[in-house]
Length: 147
Image 1: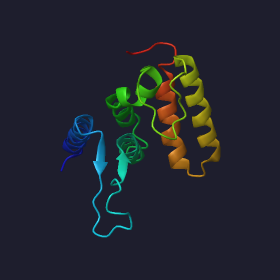
Image 2 (image 1 turned 90 degrees about the horizontal axis):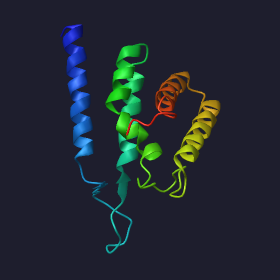
Image 3 (image 1 turned 180 degrees about the horizontal axis):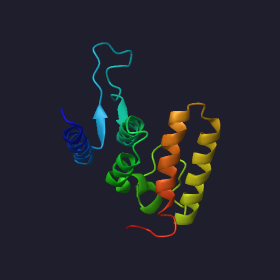
Image 4 (image 1 turned 90 degrees about the vertical axis):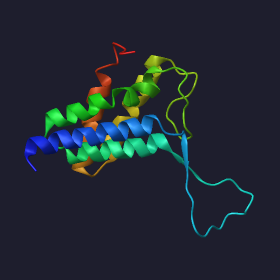
């Protein structure tokens, strides 16, 4: 497999994954063979935003050192990354740093503070590079909304 073919193959796979995630149901029901929960209780739910963020982070980790590939990944996921900051009525998941009454400026301030705290506490240099790349990309939209 040539390097050029591999690049385009990986890009198509990311776009397909992104499309599948955007067009999927809002939550996933996980079925297990044995369960300790009672028969009448609701099945566990997975936060799709967290799953997608994990996938994005993995893609960025796999692209470390290739700035153009990292930029491409971030651009492909721009709306996903900016939604909680730009869309006022986007639903804040439990444990979110955002509250429904926050202004756009307050959301960006909360984002900046949260990322800085995570960068300070992280011991993994590769994770720091990925987080820094995401932060720098997201904050380029702080003064000019793309929406």
